[in-house]
Length: 329
Image (tube, rainbow, N blue to C red; front, side, top):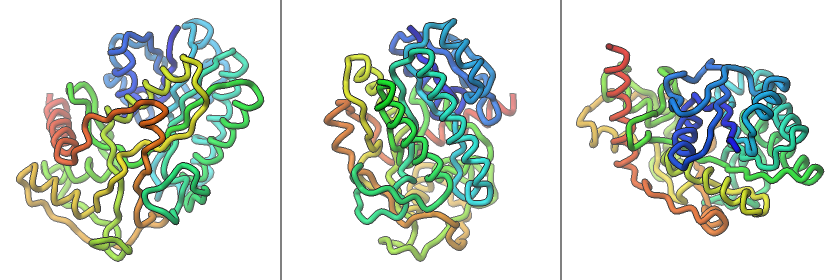
């Protein structure tokens, strides 16, 4: 048996590939390398360069490698970009996910783990956010993921496909063993951007909005460390293989930090006092998103290990320093 990891050369997908290898799994990574990096894939995994929406290719991978589970990470994830390119997001995140689900069903794959997002909640009426809160995404990114969730649920009901949908909050940090991290030079993740500014890789960083109805006016997010996140996926796989029911779970810690608090932490840990510029809010950004995270702990027995902002920042800084050395080599 093997696990197919789509987008496995990217930030979260490469962590998942490493975690599965550590657990003794056979892993096939499918990635078009448009945003991922071949060197981020663990050498023990099989890397196939291609598109998750290519049904003939996916069917061949499933057949040749004996794939029994799919972990689907391949997606576009930048909220402001989705506002200006909605059709690109619906194609990549929704249409291609539909194709992948159909291929999995036709090939007899019975387990599917889907990378979703807290953006499906939009401007939530409650914080922390429970999974049963009505979905009301306010940007095309969130809508593209919501529609994928609908398709997966319907396919599960019609075809017996077991699934776990994990709604991520803000993913941050890097592999504690230093094997992989957030490597895109133009990434928009807050902690990544702040770490780059601290190391002089950016002349300054921007804060988009300090007029939100939050404790200091900046947006509040639940920052979940990436290794903790992928261990939730491994727990989901174990759950499905044991015959567990299909689930939809938030993946976050249940507490949040403001943008300004994160920046202060990066400055403290790095010792660098980099320039911060205040800018207007971005389209589609909600004021606060924190997870009600009881269900994932109860159903998947998830026990996060790295729930500490300073630890997450230290990992992000260490990875940025590693990238500087790698690019200079």
